[in-house]
Length: 427
Image (cartoon, rainbow, N blue to C red; front, top):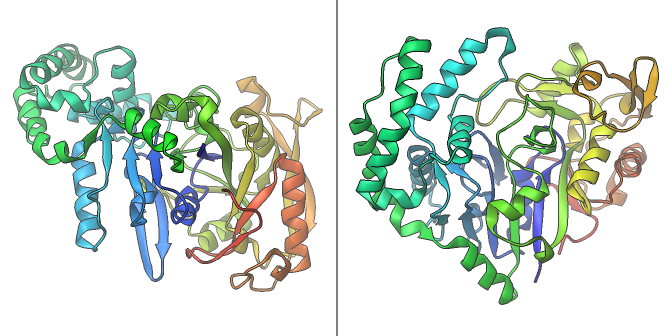
């Protein structure tokens, strides 16, 4: 059975957690393949809301094996706290598997993340301050600490001391901060070893054997396409690859084993942090989208910037991810608008542009070209089939599908697990 990839098709926060949870009854493994606790997924089951930051959303499905792949950076304190929080609510987390090759976030990564962002001032990127970027930087510089290092005190000590030799110089002499004692970091991280060891696994081997046995594997990214370090709005991006290509490197599954790539697409557009956002609304409509949609970051707690749907971005996501399907979320939030603008192209230096410009300066100056689609006032949260939707809501979905370049196979009409219309099966 081939693997499926689930990716955000905008700037993240599209509702990937709900999509993963919806598929939870049909898949056997859910793999988080990149990012860290800078991503937040919200899943609503009945009257219970679960905010997941590092754990795969599939951990809420009792028959799913959740996996944290090698491409993830893990803050062990956050991981154990999140596991404990779920255990306290009666969720079984014992099936979790963690790659020994995943890298660890340390206190010095978090400190550097915060002081560097503060130092940038007006040029700040909008990082979450959780040490994600510095941890990935150490990984690329080949001075990172991996989960497997927790079980060899000698290696762990060497790596921490080597890392802090340079980083403490930077903290003290450039940023006027206190040096971080290596022994304190070592003591803290050795204390995580016994708690993490039960979850440790050769996850690439486990996933390969699962696929050979006919199991269904769902690969889940954090963030979204426009936050990809290679394909996003650089430098206002994350430090990893949430696009579908990152699913292969971050999980150890080869590309020929992936059958479908599902893009999660919000019925309007949001983003958190700094960076260009052509359809951003700084008016009453933007505030209404924020209020009705509950647009506050799960991880950061920051209000999300809100704007109308951007078809240019959706087409770009289809192209760079090779999307086969879309899951359209939060259609219900648009109920009540008489007219709903949709960005179909940009104006850049007086020219109409229908594809995302590769030049950063052009994108910063892009002005949205809108087409207005008729809205609807009927409550759609009880709709079970596409035919149950008001005619104008149906027309809106069909227009977005045509503009985006891939079929919309499911529609979210409310935050709950059951408030979803499935048009075509993802399996």
